[in-house]
Image 1 (cartoon, rainbow, N blue to C red):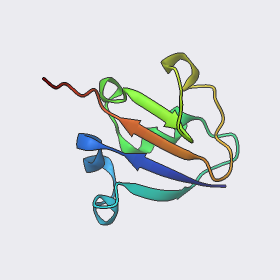
Image 2 (spheres, one colour):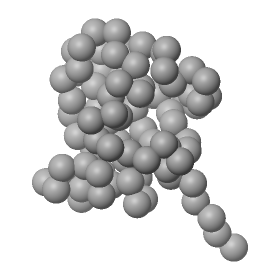
Image 3 (cartoon, one colour):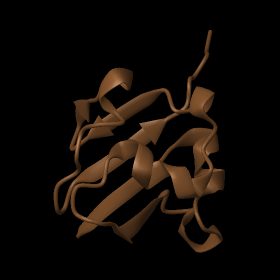
Image 4 (tube, helix red, strand yellow):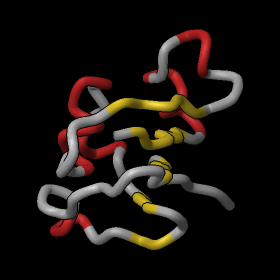
Length: 84
């Protein structure tokens, strides 16, 4: 099944080079794939996976290993961001 995977801020460096300027990539994943299964091949450091949204809905850390993605979902991830 196809999903859209988006990474923001410093996490865009983990996307394939040709997808970094758009900060997203279309992925073919197995039905029933979880968030953690999708991000594992990209090598994102766990401490950098801060804000996770599926179709604009926040996904709590405790649900990321069990929540199955659906066809055409948009998975978006932001790192922790500090400002002042």
